[in-house]
Length: 259
Image (cartoon, rainbow, N blue to C red; front, side):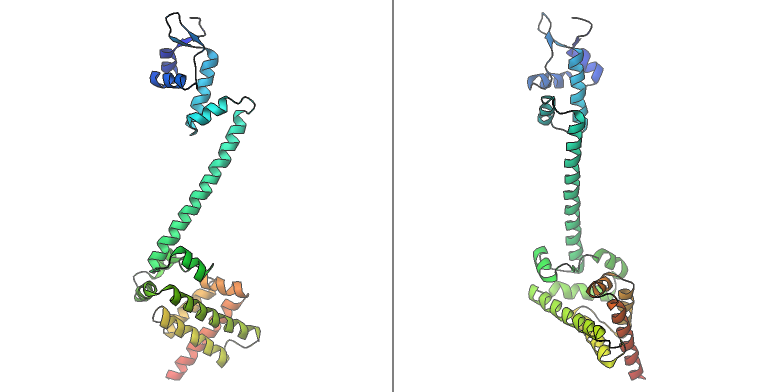
């Protein structure tokens, strides 16, 4: 044995790789010793040691033995090329996992809201305006309140047909509010206040008790550009302000009528 050759035991001690693992690498052709002693013992050269270092490097990065064997068998591609390729694959995997986490979060949020629709039904009926998108924040803000529990109980009882009907009712009210704004009607016009009252009664009937004070609170949330407010402004800039003002005017009218 020359000074540049090492026994399997010496290599194991030098690198921390077990003798059994080195034997396995030899058996699968991943790291075959360059020489054999007259007695048949494996002898590893300096080049073998450098190859083992590359094997260990790729193992540390998570490559499988088959992939490492393919890498080492392709001298036309260097380590940097392989690392760039692996990096791209890892980024793709991360994006898939993030998408899976987001899907799980939406399902958990849907259950917090009491929705019994399947994800496909929610997409088909509710489209891009998912009721569950902000359920965690809504629960943090309103969870434990009677209004929250009412909403959960009612939502859990609705069928796909019920949700389609609710969607159409909402869309009709929103469109009429938009038409009124586009027509130049002031938010305090009696016809616009009537639309605000229709909006309040829709919420009261479909989701939770919605007196005028509760309705005022929702109007402030719309103006603060929370989820529904953004949906209004997606329909037309300024619609969230218009809806807010109409709700406030309608609540003031109701208060005057009670006096």
